[in-house]
Length: 122
Image: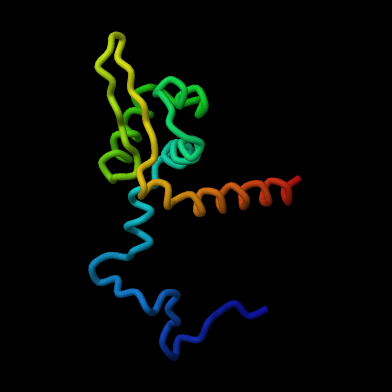
């Protein structure tokens, strides 16, 4: 089987309609949701509003510092909303914004893909 591509001719472009001179839209999107825990945060918040401790418990093996950092980045990118209640002890709730909810079909597709991949490896 010959896997070497001839050097002649232009290389086909995957996304010819995108002008990436100012940055690729895929890169920009991935920049906002990339991070070790961001995908899981979004996944769990699809079920609704959660307090910090509930989110940490659902995610599992994440440090408080790492989760806080990921939540701040998601909040800064407009994906997660943080609501602080003026009570003692402090109560903080996290939920997805409208922008965050628009990630639902993507996260659900990743979930299905992960299940299918796991089943194929068995």
